Image 1: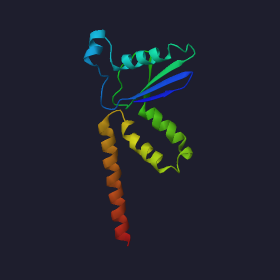
Image 2 (image 1 turned 30 degrees about the vertical axis):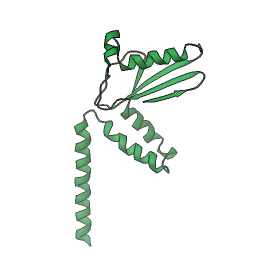
Image 3 (image 1 turned 60 degrees about the vertical axis):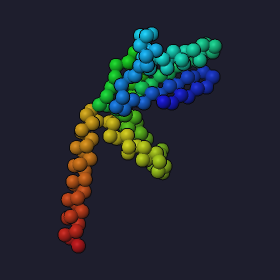
Length: 137
């Protein structure tokens, strides 16, 4: 999904939310999958420069963590969310980044239904508070 490259680094970030690790027909014939294909492509591109280091990250929600080989490091949305939460002051004035931060929270739960439960509970409490304020006025 995202590739960052300079003379010494080749960084790949693959985002998997509800999808698994896919394979094309040609992958199946070779006994590999989408991630293998991406990693092999990165090795091919960096072959000339022996100094290049490949970093492969798989960004996944906590409710869908696939098994991957050692070439890929899994980063969960919970890990990313906690990191951003601890560094909130760095982006608190960026509206788009704040929306991104809020949007990824749904992928930090062990079960997707847990987010829906929390969201419903939050709306319920807000309605109770709103009604309490209405009675005061």
